[in-house]
View 1 (cartoon, one colour):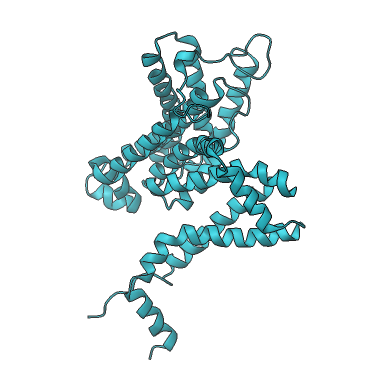
View 2 (view 1 turned 90 degrees about the vertical axis):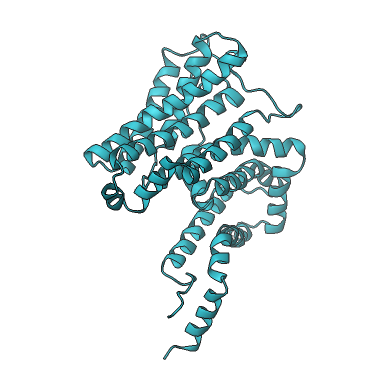
Length: 359
């Protein structure tokens, strides 16, 4: 005999509640994270309503702030797409930070050593950024596919190596004369144009949106994408079906790295224009959270990146208005990911999974 609660749960499943909860999981995770965050803010002696109002005003209070939020979201969009592309093939790319650094490094090389017209120079610089990330991520992809190395460990190690390489170069061979810790600026012809006059919003937003569209087409409308997802679902079954699992694994990691490298190149060409020691505030690591909150889908990644970008932009305003440290924003980010994972775990174990019809 089934209990009354079990019958009610089955009834809810039968009307599609499970699917609705699955699609709205990020919204619930964000709302609960803000609710728990308000308790933390109140415990710190501040007014949560005032704090969140300041956060909102600082992120989208006027056109300039909206543009700043979009600019901060661009590298998160590209790096988040990088994580999704690898994960769909059951490859855990934790090396986005290092791939961003290598993409930025290659972009600066192209932007300072080559002197070409703008219509040629800029695409080459962006392409070089993708090449840098592609090559850097192909190494752990090969080690996983051909040698059985754990890609999580390898990519984490390679993050530190990439950061160390950039640190050495900006202190030595690439150091701008008269300055420390930075390279020469890339040529004007290698910079992304501003698309909204009077703001910092650059063409990188269009690049990120185009990358999301192409990632969606690749994953869901091409043979390669089908094979990537097949390997992700069941590598042994894919191998039995004739898919070259080793090649697909390496390719998934390499393409993932290319997107992360593009994030680094876009940041150089659109915002910073030169390579600095520690130029990334952790986009490669935040990208993992962006991908999770975006439910590992290109469209979801765009929305999640905007959310995280808004938190970054509004953090300063909240700190000024109510005296809260910026770490509170990081706590909210972490809580959002935590509640996403809890919701995914509950879904996995069947609480709101759609019920099967009994024959």
